[in-house]
Length: 137
Figure 1 (cartoon, one colour):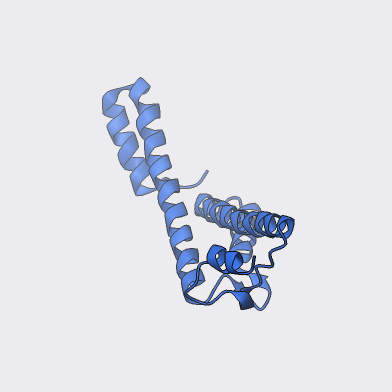
Figure 2 (cartoon, helix red, strand yellow):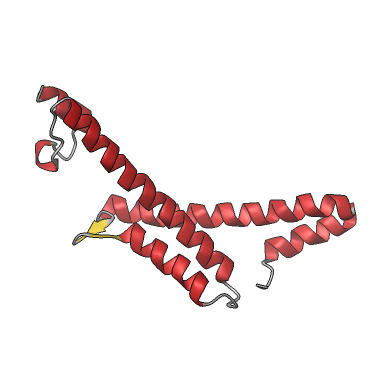
């Protein structure tokens, strides 16, 4: 089992004072805060990359790569002390990748139903894609 983080140790210390019943709640709160923080860091990092250079580089989705690396590392090294962090980071990256790919698929299907082509060349850098699509109606 992986070594406990500082937050988990702190939470268990408080839980021990509260008794066995409170221990589960406080301990879980510590793990939840930790996992949420890791997801926030991964989302923030991928958001920063997307805002500066984009997540798709030379046809390679960087969020997809991060997901494979994180989840793959968790499977390849199950006894590593940071296996939880790798798994959480991979899952967060996979959620972002799934969101982006679903958004693209649904957006293309919706646009094709009304005969709108949302090709990037039709949309200016500072223009809303919906406004650009409406102009082409």
